[in-house]
Length: 366
Ligand code: M6R
Image 1 (cartoon, rainbow, N blue to C red):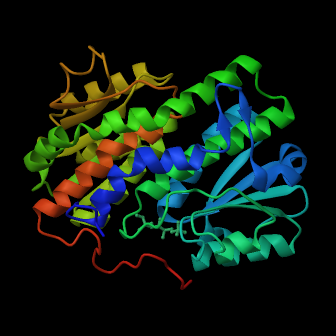
Image 2 (cartoon, rainbow, N blue to C red):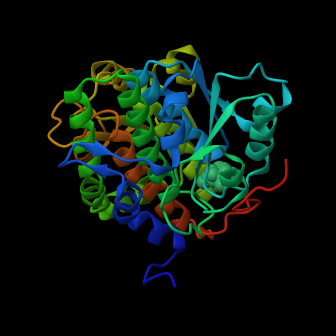
């Protein structure tokens, strides 16, 4: 049942080229330059006329929502807010007709997310569900939907559901942008091509497994980890830190890299591994400065960089090269080594990575 893998988590990490492909299949046709989203067709106009979009989710799905915020604002020029479902629900939110809520949930059963959208729906908002489990409560409650086709996710730590969410949310953003006319034909076609290439690039990134395992062995006894990224890779830093916490019980914090100087830099010393997602994008130069700031304080830098990068490698203690990609889809690739890092550290420490302590796969209590 684990297909020859030691754990479901590893199997699911390695399934990602296929599960991302499955989430794009039948929707994206890069050759023809078309995008079909059956589950939102009826609401395409409503979505493109939205005054604002509010994304509600928890945990890893919330991280996918943060990436979607950047994607949708850039592609559609619609203001997007990303909310922890539990916080959104309990503060009597200002929401009503004209608002679109995107609920992201692997299980489709997360109680916090479910009650949040129930409340918003009652107030007249349109709900778009991005769920993995077909026929789940959140999917049923939604007006429109776009399923992720990641297949059953057994490992408590979400991996393949996350990358499928990113792929589908990018499709949703592109669809709304096309409907709205807020994207040029060239950019639209370019992003279809970029998405089309993601499964192959993820397969390339998975070949880094041995290398990531060595990095894991080197840092597995650290007491704390810091994860940093900017822009599209800022939520990837949060996700990397969450994976490590869940699986290895090592304290880890994710931060937008520029926030470091507003506090967390006080933690940096020669014992602190700092994982920095520093792929070539519009934030690259700024991230290079952040790496210099960490090295000046003797932190250990583990950098995830784009293949061919020659600037960061001499500055970093460990370097992981990932295939180059447009910054919009880069998180789907840059998260792969972080999933593997958490997995290997968890296994090396002797923990049950498929069933981390105190956690349930689906959190059906508020
Ligand atoms: O099923 P959902 O996507 O709604 O679940 C949300 C969170 O409970 C979930 O992502 C959780 O944070 C995972 N354990 C993360 O690995």
